[in-house]
Structures are given as C-alpha cells and as structure tokens.
Image 1 (cartoon, helix red, strand yellow):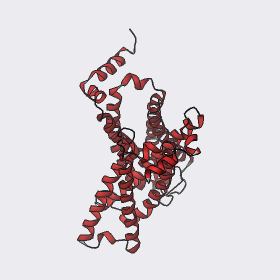
Image 2 (tube, each protein chain N blue to C red):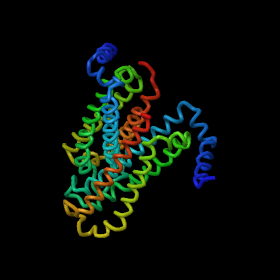
Image 3 (spheres, rainbow over the protein chains, first blue to last red):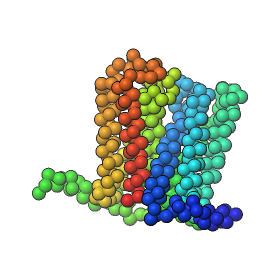
Image 4 (cartoon, one colour):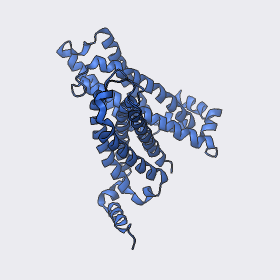
Length: 170
Length: 166
C-alpha cells in the first residue's frame, strides 16, 4: 500500500513542481521548508527536554510537572503540526527517499510513541496535577515514560538527519 | 609570506590529524557526529529562543525574565559546548572546503554577532533587570537585544542547513 501511495505521490503535479531542480521555487521552498522544520525541532526538543527531565527529578523542580506541562505541551503540539506540514512538503518532493526508507519509517514509529506519551502526560495532569507524585509506583512509571520519551526524541532527531545517509529500502 | 600563514598552518594541522582523517574516511562517523551536532543546535536555539521571546515581550509575559533565564541558560550553555565540540570535529575533517562555503562563513560571523549581543546585554542592558523583571513588556533596549538574539540564532540554524546544499 505504501508502495502504491509513493508511486502515486511521485506522479502528482505537486511532486513535479517541488522536485524540478531547474525551477527557482525548488531552490527556495525546500531549504525554507527544511529550515522551518529544524526550527520546530528546536522548539520540541527543549520542551520535551525540560518536561521529561522534570519528571526524572532533574530540571525545573521549583515549578512542578503539572505547571511545566501546561506551559510546554501546547508548544509541542504546535511545533508537531508545523513539523508535519514541512515534513509533508519534503516528502511530496522526494516520496521514494522518505516513504520507502527504513530510517524514515523507524522515525515515524518513534514519533507515534512519543506523541502517545505526550498525550498520556496531558490526560494525567488534567485528572490530577499531582498524578505522577501520588505513589511510588506512579513515580516509577513517570520516570520510565520520561526516559523512553527522551531517548526516542533524540532518536527521532538523529533519524531525521540520518535519512540522508542510511537508505535501506523497506 | 602572509600574515594568514599561521592560520593556514593550524588548519593544515587540523586537516592532517588522524582524527580528521578517520572522520573523512569512515562512512558512518561523519553522519553520527553531524546528528549529535544538529541535536545540540536544536537545544541551543530552542532554549535561547524562549528567553529571547520573553525579552522581546512576545510570550510568557506573566513570568519573570530572571526565572526564564535561570531555567534556560544552563541548557543553552551546555548544548552550545556540545555543538561547538562536535562542530569543530566536522570542520576539522575538511577545513579548507568549509571556509570556502559562503553559508559557513556567514554562520560563524552570526555566532560572533550573537555573542557580542549577549555581552552587551549581560554587561550593560541587564543591569537594570530588577526594574523590568516582571514587566510584561520590557524596555525598548531589552526588546531589541532579545529580537536581535532571536534573529541571529535562527539565521545560524538556517545557514547551518544551507551549508549542506553547497
């Protein structure tokens, strides 16, 4: 199915427009889109960095997890929307390079897991601002989620860069 | 003989170290270092951006400037050190090639400008911080310093990406 979608995408007029290297727009839109993409990565990384390290008991302890989450999670979702849109531009320009690349697919799976963890954070503190402090088990689960989230986000950013180098066809 | 000779010698020495050679010759060392460099830059720009946006009066107007800077600057400095060390390794692999790429030179210039802006902010502008720490919209000079810093760092990131297109 992904193969057919990739093939269809590479025959669209949008693909033709974005991958035409003789055209000025390609030399403008793609670097611009990539720059906005990395800028959004910057917004996400510092947000998940502070949030997860707080849950691990390392950063921003004066404010508490719930307050930090209220400040930071909207920025994570906002940046993720921009990341999706700019990522879509790059995927339309080079469907095969992204969609059929194993590195890209691993990145997407890691992204889904981290998004789910962010959603869990959001729902849990809506239930109870002190949700992750209420019992030793919850504290432990929180630390586990934070560790997974941090490792995966670093993995996502690294995979993003490595798509250009590791092209194993899935 | 030229006054640039010592610089050329240092670059040549960098280029000839076995570490630079290893980075050039391996297919995976360069991408690995580059990934770490990019992640570190993301933390540099992401963290300083938060402070800059507050200084410029765009966001978190209800939070004291000193609180945000105390929270963010440790991230900025730590990740800047990582970005610089790994950036230097990338540079050492092909110093003469990078120097000839316009975006690389502009990027270095922008980092210097961002540093100067920060020095002026630290030693002159932030002296009166007690007066505007909690003010939703800091004085003009503070907003200007924040906006300039934001512009410099975003441009550093964009130039960094553009180096790869040359």
